[in-house]
Amino acid sequence: MAVADDRREGCDGCGRTVPLEDLTAVSMPDGDSLACCPDCEPHAREAARKLSSLDQQRGTCDGCNDTFRQTDLEDAVLTDGTVITCCPDCLTEVPGYSDGGTNTSVSNESTGADTTELATRRNLCSQCHEWVSVELFHVTTIDGRTEELCPDCKDAAEERGIVNDVKLRKAEAREVLDVDADASEAEIRSAFLQQIKHAHPDRKSGSRSAFKLVKEAYDRLQ
Image (cartoon, rainbow, N blue to C red; front, side):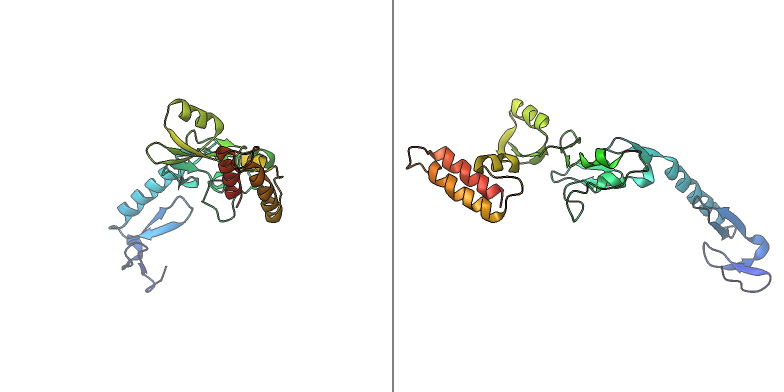
């Protein structure tokens, strides 16, 4: 704080220069102190109270279900518009939030969870908000919404009759084309050309539905 002379000093609130004896030190939650004039002192104390209250509030992460300070949690919006609250570690797992996809090597010393546990939290179901290690189903509902659902929520949605379309998962597409998970683009294309010949409706071994399935599988892996 700037000193005007030996007996006057600037208020950290309004910036006015007032007699030194009129200034009051107000401690903030982060450990800093503000020198305030009589007019600014009540506002500074109220701000300190609110910040302290916010810092002490606790909330639950929708990802790992651990409890954190409210200030350490952040909201994230899923593709269907659902808002979830996550800790910093789980926030990196939210689809579309980070720029590098899945982060499976994040240290989680603050919550006590080890990296092996975190490595299984790859996909967040937009319905139950649970992290699962399996690939999610891309579901379009009868009202036009898109959901990324775990197998249980997908089955439940189908039982309720609200599913309009379920996009082929990559794991299923690889099974259709009979390729490995690490197959190159050339290998995938070669497998597609081979399978599409057998699936063509003009062949005895083929049908319209099989032809459509093979094409869908190839498109899914592109």
